[in-house]
Length: 589
Image (cartoon, rainbow, N blue to C red; front, side, top):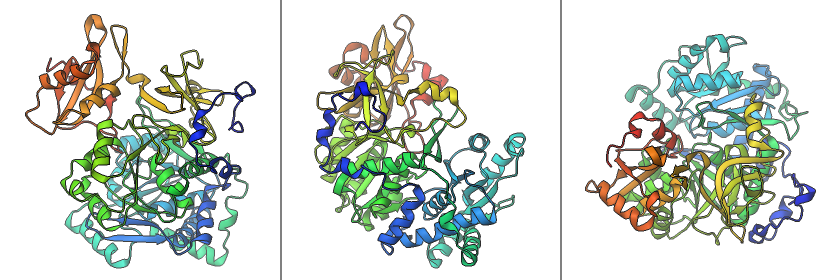
């Protein structure tokens, strides 16, 4: 545990969490399992060529699959297209902006094999948000879904002064049913184009992904150089630019190296042991451009030859039904809102998937009430983990089969965590402090943002911005985001604690708490509640909170809403509630 940045003065630091590791977890990580990310695809194609790697399931049940051999072969062709047709040098950025589908692993591994840098972009971004990412990352190629061709055109035109300084990015268009068998691909394409009219005309130069793959295959037939494209690329070279959510209004690109991502996937599988294997089928409702799904659902499962069932769009949640009923799902990852949402679906409660063995929550705090209901409905617990974009992302998991509800678990192998005060001094166990992390998964820094990098790095330690408490057994409990803390008359109030209490109140479907200005007290908690029972009143909400919270933590204001703002993965966005001028008005005292 001292080989990845521990200083001599900390070698003797007590690490009680290692007692919770599988017997061979550290031995498995004695050597980096792969040098580069592209090596994973080649190795799995050799080891399990005909096993299914990915299956994409549409809401109507139509599906397509690719074997490990097919992903390897097609990604070789895409790498050849980038290097031979487009003449991209190693290190060029390639932006991928597509929902979950069969094209995703092909393009991603193709970019890595070409020695290029993958830039994950949310397909749901507005044209303005897209333009900002493109201007910052300056990708040479954009791989985008045809459903959003109009937004791509607007993004390319929005900042011409920046984007036109160099060659215009080459656009590769793909479709929702790309690489499906011919019949379902044709049916889905016709319905999207002529019935639902979801495919706008592409009024810019582009090439279809199928044509790009054909071009790559022609180059390979003449001279297959795919294995040589990444020669000279070192494990510490940047593999991905993974943009943060932009809580300050400006997204930052976390530079994740090949080693960061390979090691984090390996750390995760070593910690999980036999729970991630070639026999598992994981439901991937979280988008693969999100770092949690990218590393756990994609890379970690790929390393173990597990199968990932991809859901292009999880909203509404009935879009998951066919996959849950017909694909033999054994493993689910998600955020609190996904699990809570499924629990509010009659079809899921009445017939949860009988093959389900494990569920893993991350991305936001898992509420105890949701964890308890999930266990009652599925007869299986949710295992909570924790991580950040900047840490590839996994830092902790609860031990499989021996987790503790209400905690984020223990640091995964080769990971160090500690809680520190404002002067970066470690606080005693049992006291809250800002969580600091280090390990092989910590980013190389923010893309072209040394100032922002300096704000979060202390040597090889990363400040997470989260307040946490470590117990004597090495389990960590998140208190809240440091920036979300509410200061009431000098007392620290953490929204997570209040939201957890609200989640236990019958009639509450979802809730979020933020601080609002409050005269002499400085701030007061305000609760935003989505009701499942229209008869629920603000007085009842406050009365429930008074039974479980000390006086200054009880929401002074309660506002009912039809829905709460959420991120692309379903995480409730408190910052938008704070930024909304109407949120600052105490409508219901």
